[in-house]
Length: 220
Image (tube, rainbow, N blue to C red):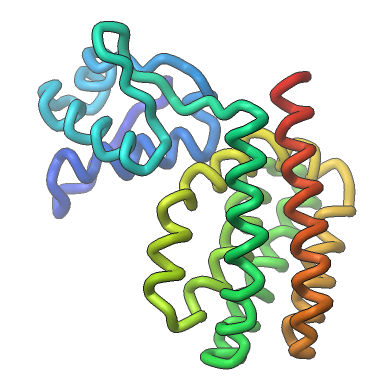
């Protein structure tokens, strides 16, 4: 396991939360894997108390499952979990995009364009983690610029799980084929043009395709 570095300004528990969520999202801690409190405490150089507090916070974010008398585990979705998450995205994400276009179009376009540039670099490097990070930045841009904090808070409830699914399950496939990347470029064009019907249709197709990719990866 890689060494876990901590920065001093935040509380110990918050530092552990940040590092563990990164490890889950980037696949250092695989989906479904056990999380040993004592080992983590030793790696972080802290007591088990901030580790337990961090695991409780991560459970609230859906990234960790704590089973009393058994242990703590990285979340491991089944096909129904994936379908529900993707259904949520299909409902909420096109509306966030429409609001972002009206509220802060130019800044949203800049952030989405930067994310696409990052995806292109990751494709060339065949870098799964970098592609997943850029893919996440692309979709989060709609929420960051939508101007509605309730939409933003709703997305954050599942944002970590969505990011983890991308990096762990779809990014290894996406870096091998241009299909996902080209869909993202098309989504940007539709967003720039204010074609919300077209964006919603492509977004729904794109998310449904991701859902099937996730399920196939889990079964494979």
